[in-house]
Length: 125
Image 1 (tube, rainbow, N blue to C red):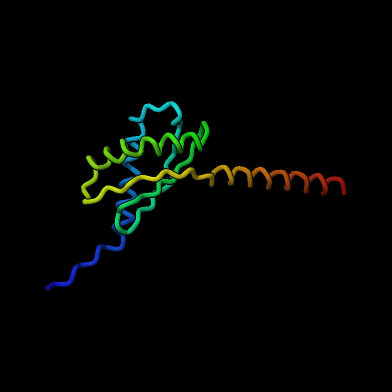
Image 2 (spheres, rainbow, N blue to C red):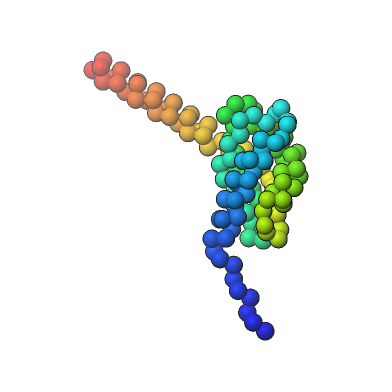
């Protein structure tokens, strides 16, 4: 019996990237008012393609309410992916609110305050 050929190592990255692009288009079709301006940050797919973590951020609105709405619409989105992707198993989608951009802006504000207070201290001396 011939040995099973291993999948290409980059295949899961390519599948995740394609899922991200297709989901960005499919999100426009959701009519839930809780879903505002969503940016998909990344997708992680399990090796068996059974599950996909979809990381997102919101420009306007409540991230947790958006996460709930996206997880409720995950079946609709998965069905849309099934029609677009040409793979055997379309993963179950799990949306996760990514707070990285919020944390980055908070850190930038802290740095700006520290620099401003340091310049005031230098001017006083």
